[in-house]
Image 1 (cartoon, rainbow, N blue to C red):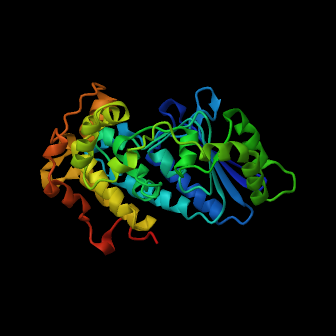
Image 2 (tube, one colour):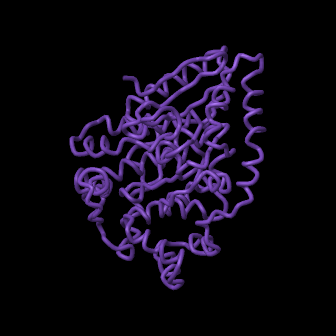
Image 3 (tube, helix red, strand yellow):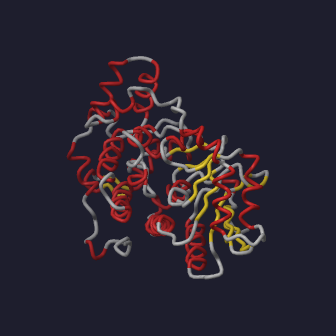
Length: 369
C-alpha cells in the first residue's frame, strides 16, 4: 500500500498522506515520494497548485501528520543505520522546497499536526486549521528539539510565544494557531470536503481564484480567531520566556507558584534538561537566520543529538534515543535524562551542539539557497 496517494484533477495536484495506523508519521519513503512528486509538479506547467491532507482510519481528514517516525529513529540509531542520516537531510530539503514552492501549496491541517507535520505545512501559502486541530512541537519530551525549521517559524511567533511552545511542547488548537501566526484560516471540519472539492472543480476558474474563494469562505471564523487571546497564554508568558536562560525562567515560574506558572514549571521539569538549554539557544539564533541557514543549523543539531561526542554519548546512551525509548518503545514514561536537573546543565555542554561536524563545502544541506 502506498503511503502517499496522489492525483491531478484539472490543474491541481492533490496529495493524501495515507499511513493512518501511524497517524501519518513520515517515513523515509514518504519523504522521498513527496519530494519527487513536488519536484515533478513544480516543473509541470499544467499544474497550477498543490493541496495536501491527511487521513485517519475512518477516512480522509481527521488527522494530518504526527511527525517523523520516531520508532524508526530509535531502531536506526541503535543499529547504526545510515538511513537515519538520510532521513533528516532529505526531510529538511523537503521542508525547504515547500517553503519556496513557486506554486500555491495548500495544507489542510485537520487533527494532529506535530513535528514533521509542521515541517510539511508551515511553508504552505495557505494553512487551513479547524476546531479539531491539535498542533505542537513536543520534541523536548523525547530529548530532541523542534526541528523541520522550528527554529525559524517558532522564533517568528509574536513576543516569546515561540520559546514557550518550543520548550514546553504545549499543544494549541486551531484558533490559537491563527492568533500566533502558525495558521492562516480557520474552517469548520465539516466544511473540509467542500473546500477540497472546490480546488478540483472544473468550473473554469484558475487555482488562484479558487484559493481566494476558500479565504472568503473562511474569513469570518478566521477573523474571530485572530481576536481571541489563547486560553493557555498567561499574561506573564512573555515576561518569563523572554528571560535569558532556562534556569531564570524556572526561577520566575517557581516564584509565581500557582496556576499557569505551576503547571508550566511542572512541564519543564519533565522535559530533557539538556535539550531545554539547546532549544532556547536554537530559537534565539533562529530568529536572525534565513530558513536555509536555520535548517543547516538544525541538521548540525540532530547529528549531535544522536552522536553527542563531546559528552561521550551515542546510540542507546544518547538523550534522544533514551527519550524515545521512554515514550514510544518501553512506554514507561520515565526517561533517564543526563544530567537530570535543569540547574546542572553548563554552557560547555550546550555550545558544542552549535559547532558543525561538517566543513561548509561538505555540509549535507550546503545546496540550500
